[in-house]
Image (cartoon, rainbow, N blue to C red; front, side, top):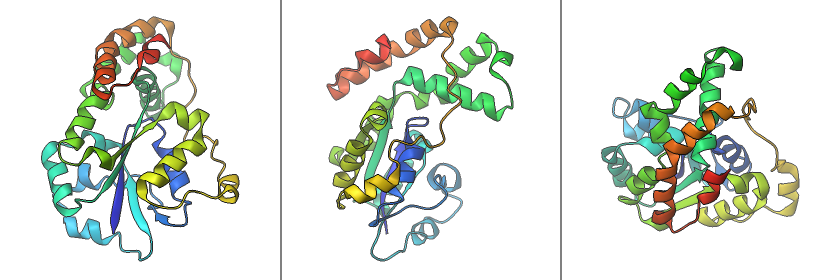
Length: 236
């Protein structure tokens, strides 16, 4: 039975989470990371067919699709009707870095080199509705926790994935109610390995201020909403 969803954010370590959690002996995640049922197939494909996919006895089953962060409230309500005990995992990354990383990913998909894309190309991407929504973490959290209890949602810090990956995995195991990874299991996981890493392009100085201006208000609002200090995102 489906027990948890990873709902985002895009370019915030979700592929790493999928890779690591897939290797836990009590968990099962599909080999294909993103099933995209709730954002692309529902309501055309039956809900029961999706739920029947998760049928492995003796495992807590889940899937990770970052686009689920953007689901409308009506779809989240349907998910709750079928899965009221569902646990949720949402990874937060500096939205300025996330926007740049996502833009570079789309650059690669367009088979373009970095020097082929003008500043205006990047600015258009940063200001696109999809990019801004993916960086609006507060909206996503409010949407999901208006239906699910807040304790069902675990917020993961992307910076901790890079600096303290074992700590992140421990928090995920505790949230899901499974045993922590043993030292031997952790040793074999390559927990610090990058999974589906981007090109590593450095943010253009000519674009930095535009991203700071775009994301300073939502970062300040998120800090107030979660009572956490994210001012370092702007300073970085």
